[in-house]
Length: 150
Ligand SMILES: Cc1cc2nc3c(=O)[nH]c(=O)nc-3n(C[C@H](O)[C@H](O)[C@H](O)COP(=O)(O)OP(=O)(O)OC[C@H]3O[C@@H](n4cnc5c(N)ncnc54)[C@H](O)[C@@H]3O)c2cc1C
Image: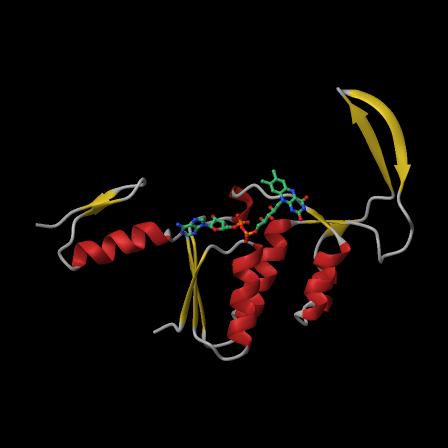
């Protein structure tokens, strides 16, 4: 049985799952989507986000992900081009554009190296609770579906 159940394998849930699993804490991570590309997230990572990977001991794995570093940004106002902005050419301040699905899969793969970690993909917490409630003779409804027993 898990010590901790985390609902949602977004950046926060996946990072927490990795950090707890690394300490030998039993973690079950639930993610309702079967594919990370189905959840819309931005892909611009600022230096503080990159530093978080370093602090978690995942700096090397992070640098191996598919990413781009823009050198120049175009500013548009009301659909009209205004000007280009040159970005500083050193890593400390430059944002990175990183594939979010790849970043999440990496964290989960790293957590999966620990035997105390379990990942349930395509599993909604609400549906799981409704199923368990139904098994115990309760009747409840979620937005997604209803589960009833008499
Ligand atoms: C359009 C857009 C653009 C953005 N651009 C950027 C950007 O460029 N840079 C940046 O740093 N941030 C950006 N953000 C913000 C960034 O996406 C969030 O800060 C970040 O995703 C929050 O992470 P999280 O783990 O807290 O939550 P989420 O990323 O929302 O993850 C929550 C996860 O929980 C799952 N979930 C929810 N309910 C259940 C349930 N009942 N059962 C199981 N699983 C469940 C969801 O499927 C999801 O995967 C953007 C956000 C949006 C919407």
